[in-house]
Amino acid sequence: MNIVLVHGAWADGSCWSSVVEALQSRGHTVTGPQFPETSLDADVARLRQVLRRQNGPTLVVGHSYGGQIITALGRDAPNAVGLVYVAAFGLDEGESIGKLLAQGPPTPALAHLDIDELGFAWLPEDDYVGHFAADVDRARARVMHAVQQPLAASTLEDVMGVPAWKALPSWYMVATHDEAIPPDAERSFAARMGATTVEVESSHVPMISHPDAVVDLIDTALARVA
Image (tube, rainbow, N blue to C red; front, side, top):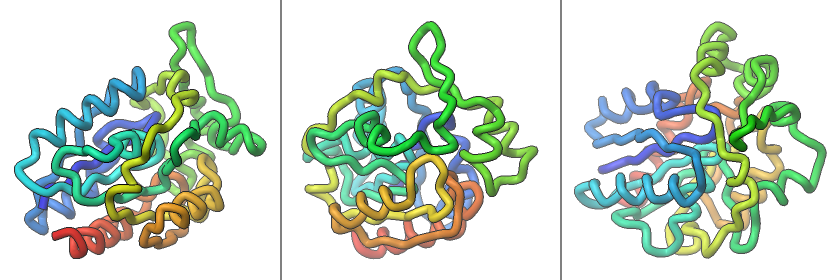
């Protein structure tokens, strides 16, 4: 099977390294591209570009803001046969990340977003290490912070069209110690999309702190769509 892994904000494709290695060892074709995060349109265009390059049915996996990207594929995602959300946004039509986050107090990981003069949001090191990647070895979390990919703040206001999960089967991993997206919000996303759901005692980055659990969920999805 083909698998495309979509990273979120303040990360890059290397965040999937342990997952990629495990999936490749099982014979799967894996692609973990880099996304510009300059706009949602640009990110969806990159994902479509990568999906068109796949040779046959493809499972698409998104983490965090990567869930926004895979959801925005809509009903005509090239080669896609299923979606896996890993502590990810799974919005419905008419919703935006900004409006969702505004429904409650800022989560600890996102409480002090540093938006620069070009309109890109960065995470301060204390919030990244202490909240965003709280269960990752501190030295590794500091490296992750150092190489973070900033997110265009405009993406927080982009309104979702018809979501891809209305056309494709979905799976969802809830990170129960997530301090970026509230775990109850993740459960709500999963419930309304009718996703097969698992929970893991993880921070916002289970593909780094609990890669085996992520691989197991992907395997579960592959067994359904293969």
